[in-house]
Length: 263
Ligand SMILES: CCCCCCCC/C=C\CC(=O)SCCNC(=O)CCNC(=O)[C@H](O)C(C)(C)COP(=O)(O)OP(=O)(O)OC[C@H]1O[C@@H](n2cnc3c(N)ncnc32)[C@H](O)[C@@H]1OP(=O)(O)O
Image (cartoon, protein in one colour):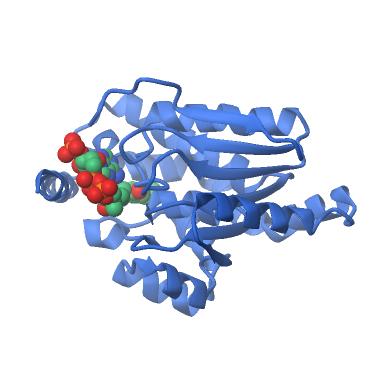
């Protein structure tokens, strides 16, 4: 993987006062500990500055995020793996539970953790193309944590979520639109951001406290579930990493990714 040259995220505020959080970890924005830490800090900043809304996107021309960095899970240092997992939990709690308005401009592929980040936002616009989105964990021989599943069940009907999760379904843009995994498609990234802004403007006349409390109440179930089970969730993750069969599956998956990239 290419060495990181610049900052891992860019956080800017546009003329309308909307925060744009851009993930910038080439080549595929795989979520390693450092990227997750930077996303978490940016989310804190958005909350602290009382910015009314945030759009999450990526600097890559074809990938929103490739999900968790598999190298964080393959034969890891267990102390780092624990920090990695709790940082991912923190990012999800901050994003899914945020009081400000959130939208994702999905400008490319969004598998697994990439899909999770976008589903944690309130609105999703995905750029048309041969991109796919979904939770593909079972295809890697791993089980998505309950809060990943909860987030999907919060986004699409539970029957569709069960089917998608068990079959590791990766949705095309049209399929995602049909099932409600995304709200709109867009011709390019600029159009996706414009459409996210149009969604954000819908709240101009809605009192912000009423909106925020409503959002947080409707999201309370999954949030409380993780908050109550955080330690157990982390222990399960670490136990999973120690399982030789899982390590073997990850090794095979890494090899298949490398072979594909080399072609
Ligand atoms: C509490 C209970 C237990 C919990 C269990 C754990 C649960 C774990 C939960 C979540 C899992 C995940 O998020 S796992 C990650 C899943 N992600 C994927 O499967 C995506 C894999 N990547 C791709 O499909 C493609 O890369 C892409 C479609 C995203 C982009 O394709 P593109 O052709 O543009 O790029 P390349 O495939 O050529 O890749 C370039 C380069 O990046 C490396 N790469 C890709 N994805 C990852 C990744 N997720 N992690 C690390 N590295 C990745 C790829 O190997 C290439 O590397 P090289 O250039 O070095 O060969």
